[in-house]
Length: 353
Image (cartoon, rainbow, N blue to C red):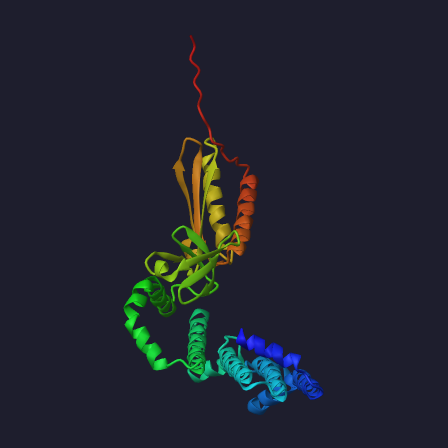
């Protein structure tokens, strides 16, 4: 409240000289705002030594530098106003803290998965991991940067970091007890990254949940199910249950049971079975070694012919189209052979009195 009162008093006692100072201050702010993009562009270009404008503007430090020059313009504009010492000290501290945050933001942007700098770091460190492991490393690097920035900001406020660390040591038991689940999920996240039971983009099934993996964080994994809903699962849960990774399979199995009428001549049954085998063998999407077509059983409804094979089509939508085409082909073969499919039958007995 005292600070606000002093600011109000400053504006009450404005003189012509003060008004001129305010005008100069505003002019400085406007100039820095207008030229902030230019200044940021020049500085990034000096360090990148490239002429590609798009790459320069995509650099992680470009936007933080723009914000910094706007902030610098405001700070210089306030210097011109010759504010009281205590007010100016607060402004200076805010300027320093904002500069620290913008610097941390710039370094954090360099560790974005899509950034050119991060790609170069990966090449130099020979980081040939999956999308999940690379995202994980990127997030760890960003967190460490912001932790360092937070400690610098705390020191800027005048707190004794050694005392803070000591305090954390005293309360470590309490923190450990409160964060057991978080720590467990974090270690489980590291386990998922190292073991790689699934990657981002994989179609998985876990317990009663199934969907496509969208993100793997320190604590949770997010999957999007068939209803377009996001399911968030703790990593600790994923490491203690069975996971079916449907994306990793190398082939899909197709099973079908054709039931012919009981009065179908055996010659036609035999010919149809052989023709189905020949037709399936000529299909390039069917693995030849696994084709099985047999006169399976004689059921109450008719003669059962079992058909099973594997296809190299993995994508689910393509597999559905493939199944549809196979079904059309089989129905056409049955029609050409003048054979009728059986329908479920039921015997009804009437009691006469």
